[in-house]
Length: 118
Length: 279
Image 1 (cartoon, rainbow over the protein chains, first blue to last red):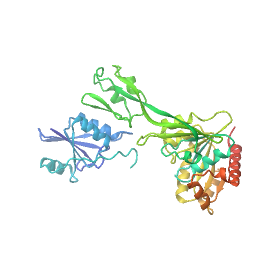
Image 2: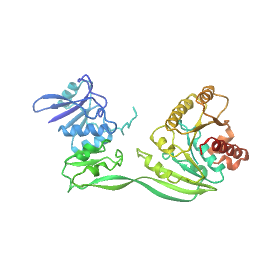
Image 3: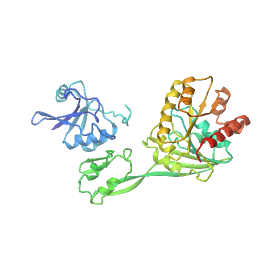
Image 4: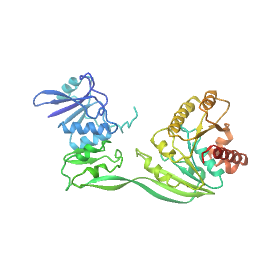
């Protein structure tokens, strides 16, 4: 099983933006290894959330841990069968541990998208 | 002649000026391009109103023909298409209906369907033809509705007044695209002045001649007045704040139809615009 987490430039903390995070951490539970991949949507003009969702689906992630998520990306994950969990703490590895311990809740509320607004 | 009325800040009196300018002219076309909140019709109260829908193209995919090559998904720069479970998924609000996905599909699996995004209403109010653009709630782009409204402008000598949306974004740029002259309505406040400078930059960028109406002008606000002198842009009219006028406007009255002095003021404004506008 693969788990995706949007992370910041420091490659350790969870990025508050899902779509425009600079990197994604992809953890493979079978090999117990993590890889860091560039988010191709980070600099997208528009539809960054959708493009990032496409990336997460394409890497074969089964689960996503994020601070928040837009409605459009959430629709993609629903269609693709990717479960979305809400972060509990700042660091990506802490959240992975929390997920394995069953401490993370599924994210159920999604924002309508920022569309150029900050 | 097409006159676009714009302001940057909302609530400065774009609709007040547009409606009264249209009503003061003997015959005119009033185009409400503030399609997210079109309210000129509340004042002009058009009769014999007809409505026609505004639709945009939306791709639909033939699952039998689609081979999953993803060319359409890769082509879409707006990221309106996402490839999930071996088929493209379309996000209608993100789609800019460019038709590109249909062109790049080697299997001819993409068809175009129509998606309603709003409507245009047309009616008559005295000598004014009233055209109202209405954008459906939740739609991201107002441009298709504005484009449809602008097609109703008159080209031959008559007056068309375009009531623009607030701000200085895409929908405002579209609204002023056909204008021969831009009328900038400004409020003599720091906020009003700030947004006035933004729309002024926009109309200059678009090489549109412009003049200024200062509305709710109780006392002089010198930064705005000085700015107009510095940029060599004429202040065509100052409308003083009046509680009585505000009350009447709030009741949905058209000032020039009730008040001969107001009618004279707006006819004067129209003459000033005619003098300023290029022929």
